[in-house]
Image (cartoon, rainbow, N blue to C red; front, side):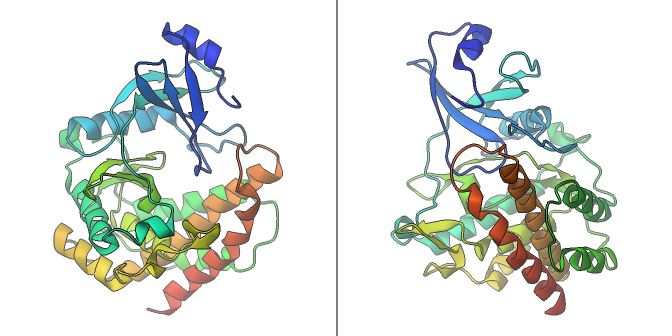
Length: 326
């Protein structure tokens, strides 16, 4: 299996023979379902190439999962961290397998109360941001002070490290964001990529687990809310093989309703959300440009990478519109 030598992993774990499959849908860290015939786990490892500094850190992911699971927040429980790159060629960690549905099929979503589920996701995000980082062992997980300014600089650096083509308007968007950076309120644990298809949902439409914590840190919680809003309008879903945005599903709350629900649950001020939405569009554009860069170098695994690059210009335009619409 590309990216995972099951025989070496089995020898390292001292386990019975392992079998596994790669999870579809991921465009960054590689994720595999594993079993020895009795137990089930999930393994996470970095992508195969072009790993940028500070990105794809397995130790950080493992640390945040351990802290949040002990605090009672819905995440998979981590069971093993390995930083020895001799085992499978990269650091990795194992976590428990959690049952649940990841909603990517628009036709399936139309059969549930999507409005209620969306508000449940908003509440889950607000609950994450209500946790005291120091009290759950994550007081040193990041520096909330100056978070937004560092994010603007960091994602410009990530963009510069992934340039393979001209992208109209992206440098101008960065410049606009850099001239009016909110100071931000109290820091919190932020997920960094919170969206519908990063959540395992029960049959009762409760959250069994929030997944994919590779970009988590201590920072400004409005960055998570803004990115959730950006994702609501992105073609994350499919219907009969065609892309579909969550907000186009009947019953999905409006973006204003999402912001109001979060404000009510979290008791946070969301009046500067326009800047955060503009930055979220820029950040996602840079992330997808990095994926496109790896695709052009032949360093991706699985289908769907050939269309990622085409999504970037629309996000740049969306970022400009967010700033202009205020």
